[in-house]
Length: 95
Image 1 (cartoon, rainbow, N blue to C red):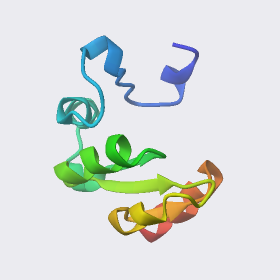
Image 2 (image 1 turned 30 degrees about the horizontal axis):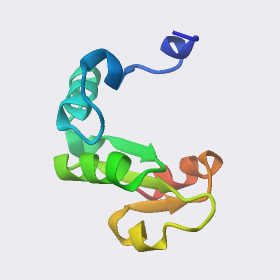
Image 3 (image 1 turned 180 degrees about the vertical axis):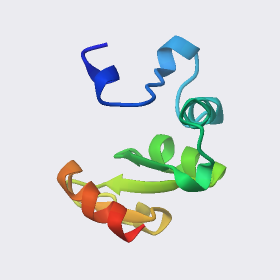
Image 4 (image 1 turned 120 degrees about the vertical axis):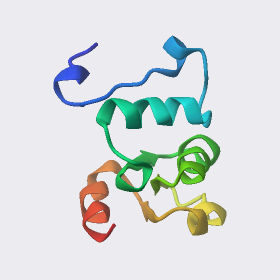
């Protein structure tokens, strides 16, 4: 799939499973494929409901990408907030 399978250990596509984020089935599937508990996993995304609420409800860590700084009301829900994907590595060091 576009070479992503050479980079990622798990790829879960919502359309293939018939569910959309934040449905916990999607996150549980990824956790199962990776063989890790929720507290050892991090979701990185830019959408509050889909990328923060779903994973946080399962006990996962969540990094919010807020490129424009217009999601300040959601910052308190995230474990870490970054401006872009390039900052995720530094956030992971903190988590």
